[in-house]
Image 1: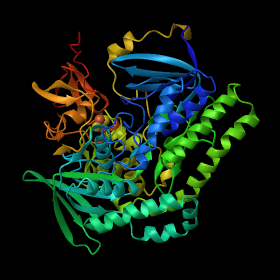
Image 2 (image 1 turned 45 degrees about the vertical axis):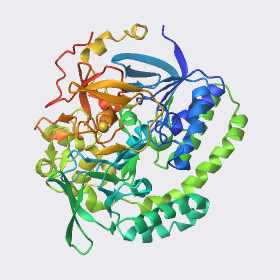
Image 3 (image 1 turned 90 degrees about the vertical axis):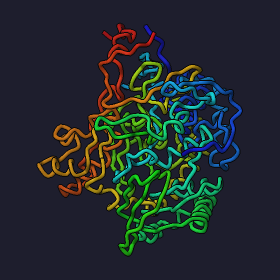
Image 4 (image 1 turned 135 degrees about the horizontal axis):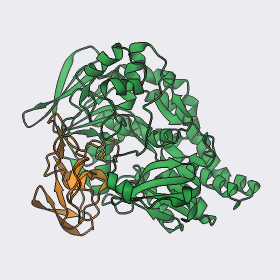
Length: 461
Length: 102
Ligand code: FES
């Protein structure tokens, strides 16, 4: 019979690492798997080895002590381990072309978030990528686009990208901000939350000021499309007054906010909830990470996107409660140790409604132009999908069966959100009645041979 | 289209992109390593469109390449290794072709 770990944690980002520090620190055998080559997740990507550490500000540098503590906490860490199926007591993963399954008494899913993919014409062209992707290249490899760059989107990370680019003197042809102007007004009703994290708020204002003063910004840009032109790209957009303009670029970075990566939690058939302001599906869990399935927990941006500080505190809380559940911490001890983390979470939660409203996605941006490729894998445009939807599709799974979006190698990670928005709009359905595609194992394409060679789980038969 | 802003302390190794030797730093992902020489495209879609890494974090599968003879590898999740042979991948991912490893 194979070893049974006390805890398996999927994801070595801020939440996963923090949880492991608690569980391993309290003597629980802990295995952490992550598909990247190093711990850190995306926000602290490669911070342990980065050529840029110390050059990207404290938001990034704060990750280094965490990564160091994690690597010394006694948890076993498996890098390049890509999880493809999950059950309450077991995790299947592929590493270097070989699959295996591992068992645990408690499983924590801390797989974080991804940039919301928002299809627009030309977004599949080489030279166009997520602004988070460019950030990853900077952190992990010290690479920056040569410019001219056009940044386009909405969210705090677009401001951060603008600040990074100008700091390293990359020419920026323009920053197209696609947020609605009314958002600031709507956010003001949550303004009291600012008091909970004044430093963070000022940091944001400072980034915004630097962006507005240092770059050519277009507020309320809409109807954006990209095409090849000569050696580079041309980005065309409409201003608020409806005038069409265009900018030449060699790299275009897109960003429309960050949403939970819910494929793994949907695969586990956990209960999910719809976030109406930020418009995304996420797993439903209490503050100790308990989901609708006993033994399966979750933490960090997988549950609600609140950023690294909250994710660290949430991971710690979940780690502590796992220690309680497995008999390492009496309830009173858990509560005592939880106190500082609860305070942090309270502060993050207080500011979040302001941020969510301020950076709420613009509904018109989420309805793709007919020419936009929505499903990149199967090369299906919004026009192709609209036809099938009008023909009588009322769910992403139905549309998948009809028109094949989500059938390619990414298995609907990229087109899922857009398809939900399109069906809701065309059929007048409330979004909370439109779950994303049903997730099936394996979560990514595997060689059949790899499945056959997998050590057989004979003790399960 | 991307340039280095900071030299890392890592040691340099050689990989091969489309048969051409490429000096890269240890610890990089394949997707980052071939960004320049590939001009941003690392595969074609089944309709023949040029595509390249979009998310750099394992989500979009636009970075599928043939690495050391094994097709459909996510270049953004694969670290470079001395002597690695990296090729663009064209058309529909072929999951029937058994790889030629070992
Ligand atoms: S670039 Fe998106 S999966 Fe590799």
